[in-house]
Image (cartoon, rainbow, N blue to C red; front, side, top):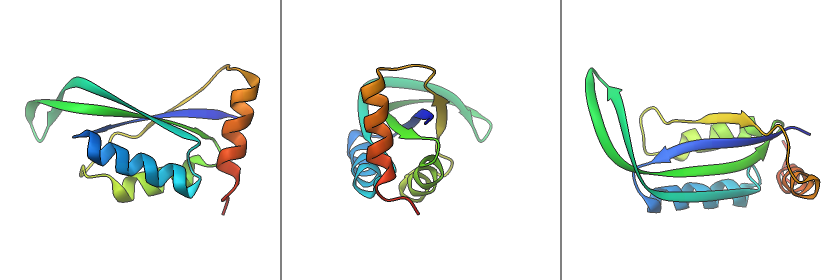
Length: 108
């Protein structure tokens, strides 16, 4: 079972926490960690922007990823949200099994 770590930035902790709760509650994520206190520098609509953001780091599986992406896109406050998935190449077997079990409960 392939485990993914999904990264998504949010404008504030409140919106990140709401998205995290939704993803875990619906079973598309096993866990979501919120990392605050970061600045992002990026180009948007032809201008360089600097924003304070928080990072949501979500653990899911390859099978659950389509549900997670759809749900995260639907609840995200940004017009074009950052949603990047990286495959975990290795990890504690028991943890990886837990992620698979937690995200398999509501498969559609």
